[in-house]
Amino acid sequence: MTDSGDLVWNSAPGSYSNLKVQYLDSEPVLTFWNGSTIGEKGYGWVSVLDTTYTEAYRVCPQAYALTPGNTTFACYGDIHESTITDRGTMLMTIYNITQADLTSVNGPKDGWIYDGVFYEVDIKTNKTLFRWSAYEAGLPFTEAKGPLAKAQYGSGTLEDPYDYFHINSVQRVGSHYFVNSRNYWTSYLLNSEGEIEWQIKGDTGGDFQIPEDGHFAWQHHAVLRNVTDTDAVLTYFNNNNGNPPLFNGTNPAEGLEFHLDLKNKSATLINNLIDPTELAYPIAAGSFEPLPNGNVILGYGTYPSIKEFGPDGDVRMSIRFGDIGTSNPAGFTSLTYRTWRDSWVGTPAMDPILVFDQGNEALYMSWNGATGITKWEILCGNAEKQGKVESIAMIPSTGFETMFNLTDRGCRSGALALAYRDDVPLRSTEFISLTAGH
Image (cartoon, rainbow, N blue to C red; front, side):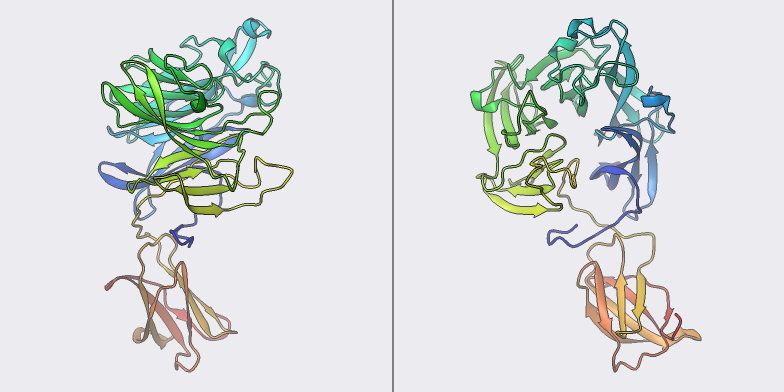
């Protein structure tokens, strides 16, 4: 949508996640996950569209995962991550059901878990360049904050695996990787071999000293920014809520921004973004995205809201896209995994569309996905002689759909509309008949 809330592009119906403008070979592309879901896990691929909305690449990791019910899929890429790196690869998560000894958390010796795995995939060939597994890294189950046998975390059986780690974001930082675990309240910096160099934890701080007002839990969208050898900025969407008994829905979500002293391993809280007039309690998803002008966009995940904060923490914009029930402070009527504000210039491969409403004698024109359309030229002609048309009006575009009334215009047989971006004609609709039955 635009800044004014007007629709720009509406995809075909489907199961999608994480729509984002990214860059591949220095050119803007539109990426989104597409596939099937079982609970919070996804099994699919990532489509990479060019500015005409044509699929240039379909990223499908060359990997197999054991799934609930041993269901098979064409691709096993998960919904949680689909970031393009600066070397033309994509980072993708996969959830693989794996057998594990759960006796350390009072579970069965021959138990089953969801292993949190990520792949770095060559976008153009789908070849795997790097793979990392939380289970293979030897992270102890005892550090998981979600108790075994609680419904939302799983009982540890093949039919109901234990979601102990819950990987939900991955980033490439130079030759390193930055991985976030929702259910450990922990983010890890890995070296190029996948070994842990340091970790920051929301409760104890891990390898870092964190301030009292900087604790986080069930966090999403962990991103390191402005990284040097000595310093970095770390941002989170801090959900700060889980299901009882760990939290009881009294901790509002917030956007957190830290300065990390990488030499002395200390974290200083720079920003704590929260709207005191609308406290939100999403238990899943969410994002923190700094903007070039110093503002920050927060997406609230399972709470159907988007907010833009100014540099001083004041709310500059607030969007609601779903109902909030008083008995359900976490939302869930609608949700967005992550939210972005990006520049995008789209010129669809598909032609614009013109529809005639005979009852109102009005033409309606739209071009799904086109940006920057400033005006439409209306041309009329004889439906039997479509090559002969003449311009009868030039009208300003009013957004996704523009209406033109034909009353007293002398246009009775057929018409088409031509879209302009500023003074440049781009594409016309098909010539349509204005007679009855068409």
